[in-house]
Length: 356
Image (cartoon, rainbow, N blue to C red; front, side, top):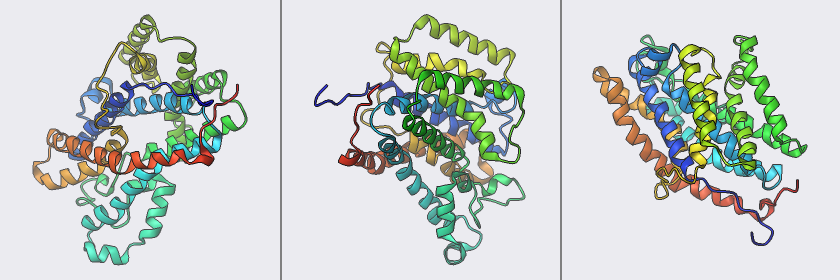
């Protein structure tokens, strides 16, 4: 400790875990994009409708995000916290949106490049996409093939629905910081309410998609947040990790329809992520490429599927899209995200240790 600063613990395993999670999303989307259904995806065939491998990847993202974001929230003010979160989320998201609107949109518009650029309301489209990431799933006058074949023909990025949920979770954490209630008991309460909600209500907000998605995915974020408080007090226990992993397998086998059953794997996941003994590839030379990989995965798959045409298969789309998305994730991190994060050093927002 120097000059009153408190350094956060660094867990190198998280980079590899999140990259694997992003890759599982691309793998599962390959079935949906090439076959227009995920019915043949191995995990869905094994566990039932909706249980694709990619959704488990999304769970991993939110659990690890809740853990790391709550750790970050222990340093500095709510404003500084939101500034750091904005620097992590928005630069790559803005560039991905601009490329989707002005490059991908122009190339895959039935109006042609000039017609698209002249007639589309690009500023409005861009702003709506940035303010509501769900809007970025479909862009006006853009289609990758005949929409009569599938509604997926007009979906530019089907992964963006999680970005808005992530931002909303950040706002909740900042609000709890502001009122001094970012504590383990409140996280436990939020988690308890979340995991029992699905038992009482099926599609609790049928007319408000954002809230339905929030009640579905946010408990995984709060679970990660609670685990940070748990791990802060005591080291992860391998026996508990094995017990939770076994319970998770049993829940998937006998109750696969319960959307919070996979949460039982959260403790084993954090055990692996924070273990000083288990050493995954640190990806130090590549950097934290998972976010960029996740952002560009779906658009790349749509382009690959279009290029393959009648020869498109899930394995071909996956095999070509994964390395391309990894490359774009690497470029995004090294050319943009890493540089943007340097702005968090601005003196007015310099982290201060939070006084309990």
